[in-house]
Length: 395
Ligand SMILES: Cc1ncc(COP(=O)(O)O)c(C=O)c1O
Image (cartoon, helix red, strand yellow):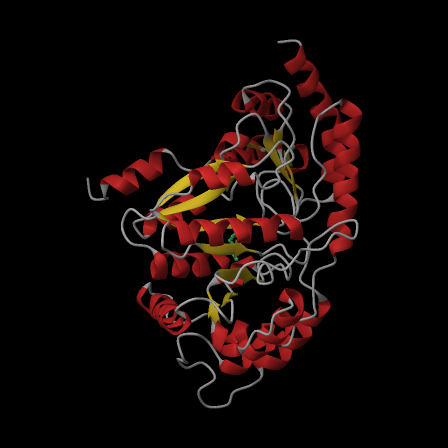
């Protein structure tokens, strides 16, 4: 066999999202796309904001020498300065361009962080439900993912986090607003987490890093806000991208920032910059860096997602599903009406509704609905969500 044993293993247990995506493609070919309700993928369908097109048109016309050349591995300094300005407001801590790196999406940023931090066997705590690829990113760099559950409403469960920390704990990764459940961790919870990590770090004579993955920060509902992680804990690193808030996932543009007072800052920033290069990213895409620098206040029309959230919540609660309404992102993570979420997702499939079982996010007994689909798809799904629920209750 040409491919490594590890990749053979990954290929056989390929993610539930991928499986559902493939099933969706098969069903659309068989029944026609208009007859399938595909809630499986978090691929934004809301167009980028109008300013994106304007800035893009202007920037592609620039033919100055070197515009397509290599640059410092961390990205153009003026682009980082523009992002640092906005982050300073969001994080209520003065961030400068020297605290930041441009990355190939949040995924690239997370891999850089893991590469820079992890020794073989180091543990990284991930909170269930979690973004499916965290385990892979940790494993890519020799670390071990340690799963800790959140509470019944997907809030931080601090005693469980405390119990999971050991001498091998290098970092904890949080994601708020969360994929798949839409939860936003409160400022109080973040401060308490920061205190817990400080005390645990002192106990084990180490630094435990807090990695905050925030690509959904600007997609929030009902006046909710995403509190600052930098205010809560010094040894934190924020990773983000424009994949969701500008609907540019294919352009692979993101960034990361370390807290300006993070421990061993110079060495860490050197390691992160080197990791950007030696992982083969070299630097984030040049054209997109120049584009996003001009779009710090822009965001997709989040009212579209807010309306869909309302529509779906109404459909689900009318039927009797139990769920915590999302505060942000574009997912709902209801409880499966039967214990076996994979079996329930199969019942939804019979209704030509594609969702993803919670087991794929470390939280069995739930399923994820991604509402990056038109309102008409949501409206059309109502009868199927009801029939699958009734079938499940009759089992
Ligand atoms: C929570 C979370 N983190 C990271 C990513 C990766 O984002 P990017 O496309 O910016 O690499 C995603 C993508 O869906 C995500 O949902």
